[in-house]
Image (cartoon, rainbow, N blue to C red):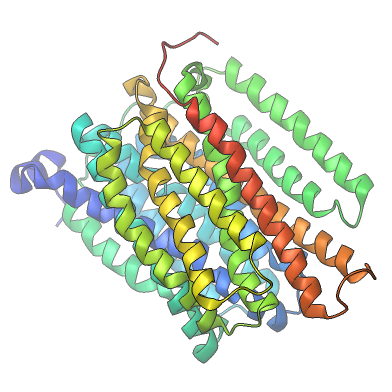
Length: 476
C-alpha cells in the first residue's frame, strides 16, 4: 500500500500530517516503554544474574548510552534514506531486541539486546519533534506536541503497573515482549501512511564518522569513569580525563568540518543554548529519579513489583492528562515560564520524597509522585518549543536531534550518578555506628539522601530555564 507523498496528501488531505504523527507517536511509545519498564525488574534481574547494584544499573545505562549516541545519526539517516525506510528499520531492530532480550540466557546477552533496543530507540525518538516542527503551522505546534506527549506518556504511565504484574507472575522475561504488539501495529501504519518520497529527504552529505567516534568515546569513558570512582580511583580519573580530551576534540572537529554531526551554529541562539542546558540537567533528574523510585519501593520499602507499580500508576495518568493541557498553554504563554514551573514542581516532588517520614505512607508516596508528574507535563511540550523557536528552518532536524541527545546524555549520566550516590550512601550508613542499627533504617536514610541529590539537580535547571528566551542570534 506504499504511495508517494503527493498521493497520500491527496487521499487524506490535511489529516495526513496527523496520521503521520500517530504513526511515529506509537513507535516512540514502544521505544520509551522499552526504556522505562525494565526499571521495575531491576531487583529480579539482580537476583537472577547475581548482579551488584553497579552492574545492574547498566541494564538501564547501557540502553541509554546506545540511545544517546544513535540520536545524533537521525538527521543524516532521514536525509539519506527518508522517513519511511529509516522508521521501518528502526522498528524492526527494536522488535528484534525485545524478542531476543526475553530469551536471554546470560547477562551478556541481556545487555547486548538492551543496547540493540537503545540504538533503535535513539533513532526513533527525535523524529516526532522533527515532523511537528516541519509539518505543522506555528499555531498548531503546541497542540501537536501536547497530543504527541499524551501518547508518549500513556505507555510509561501504565508501564510500571503492567510491568510489576508481569514480573511478579510471569518473570522478568515477560517485560521484554511488551514492545511486540506496538511494533507490529507501527509496521502496518508505516505501510499505510508514510510515503516513499518523504519531504524530509534531501542532499545527505558524507556521514561524520569522526564526530560520532569522538562523541562515543567521550560518553563511554565518562560513564565508565563514574562507575569506577568507587573501586579504582586511578582508572576512574584516567577515563574521565580521556572523556574531557574527547569532548574538546569533538567540539574542535564540529567547528572545523563542513558536515558536522552537531551543527554548532545552533548554540549561537541563546534560547537553544539554555534549552540544551535545561535538557541535560532535566535528563539527569528525570531518568535518575525514574530509575531510583522503583528500586526504592522494592529495596527500601520491601514492596512487591506489582505494588510498586501501582504507586506510580496515578502519577502516570495525571501526567497523560497534564501534557495536552500544557501543550495548549505552550501556544499562549512563554515556554521558559512553563519549563521553570515544571522543573520546580519536579524538584519539590523529589524533595518531599527525601524529607518525608521514614518509609512514608502509600497515599503520600502516590501524592508526591503526582506532583512530580505534573511538573513533567509542563516541561515536555514547552522545552522543545522554547529552545527551537527562532532557530533557522534548515537547522530544525539537527536541533531536535541535539536536544534529545543532550537530554539522553544527561539521563545516562544521571542513572550512573544515582547508582553511585546510592551505593556510597549505603556504604556510609552501614559503617556508621551512630544511627539506627537496622538494615531497613540504613537503606531508608541512603535513599532519602539520594532523592535529595536528584532534587537539587532539578532545582539548578530552573535557573537555566528562566533564561530560555529568544534573542537575536550571535556568531560563534
